[in-house]
Length: 112
Ligand SMILES: [Zn+2]
Image 1 (cartoon, rainbow, N blue to C red):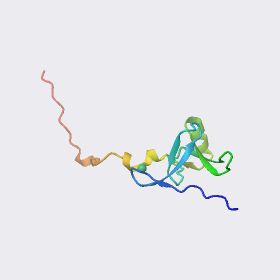
Image 2: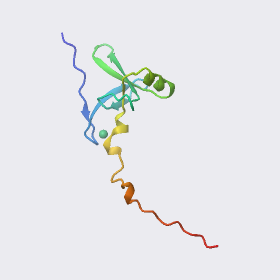
Image 3: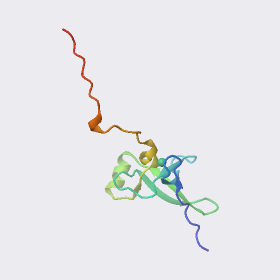
Image 4: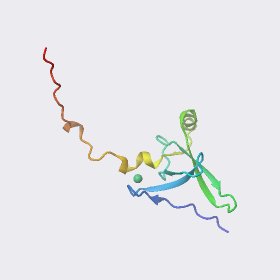
């Protein structure tokens, strides 16, 4: 018997990038979307492989780290993943103005 393969990434409905959906380790009814490749510089999500109760199918949990926990994980070079909502291209501002094209409005002078 071969173990079932982990679920493949699902394209993000907004930017089409592949996203893995893991169960939140703190909220049972919440799924957390993460980018498939770990990011040691910007990652905040710890991957926690587990097994489904009863069926023993592999199920992935995600712990979103912050504060000291995150600092400790980074210090010990833990493999952390990035939440997709922080990298989703659909969240980037549309048509950002290049710095050189910003209009500088003259400040109003006060009449004495
Ligand atoms: Zn996206």
